[in-house]
Image (cartoon, rainbow, N blue to C red; front, side, top):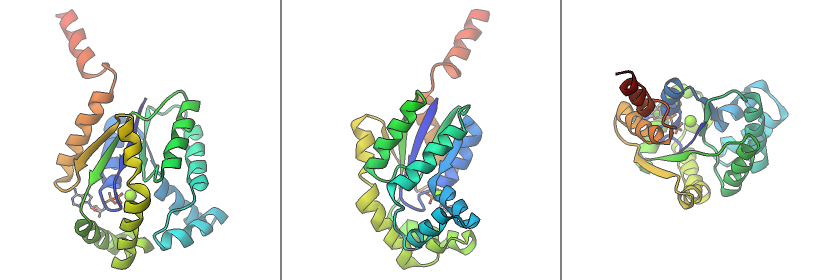
Length: 207
Ligand SMILES: Nc1ncnc2c1ncn2[C@@H]1O[C@H](COP(=O)(O)OP(=O)(O)O)[C@@H](O)[C@H]1O
Ligand SMILES: [Mg+2]
């Protein structure tokens, strides 16, 4: 299985790249933000609690998002792999993800972090806010608050994966296609030698 943790601050391009990656690698996209917004739309109790925190740019408690990921993994037992987008956001969440994946006899393949400077994030999210309908995209103060929460609470998750030699950083400023190509290069290295190399080997045998 190919399990990618796609990492980066709000507005870094995780959702954009995830849409391209799921098509190419046949992965299931698990965005905790999207899962929480679905709960809010459905008006569940969990959604109501989450909305208050999300509107303020704050993190939802670890056990809430871990529970959602646990169910999503159980609901997708046939998946070729997953993209974790917006999760894990804390080190305890990263530790829980390892435990959850171990129950399914798999593990995180790698983390790709998209690095984008704050001014560019603010610009992108204000632009996204014109159409996203997301209350947390609507004003600059809230956006900066989310970036601060990312820097203080979330950025250290990168160190967790660096220790395991799974960390890859990319410049998230540039053409969407170029960044996609760079992520693909990293992911292709993670794949077992089934696709490119063994296809070549098979061709050689045939020839
Ligand atoms: N490489 C890029 N260059 C310019 N704009 C981008 C790039 N990647 C994403 N965007 C735009 O930035 C905004 C945030 O991207 P998104 O994928 O929603 O980020 P995230 O999921 O990390 O919060 C979107 O409006 C998107 O169209
Ligand atoms: Mg997103």
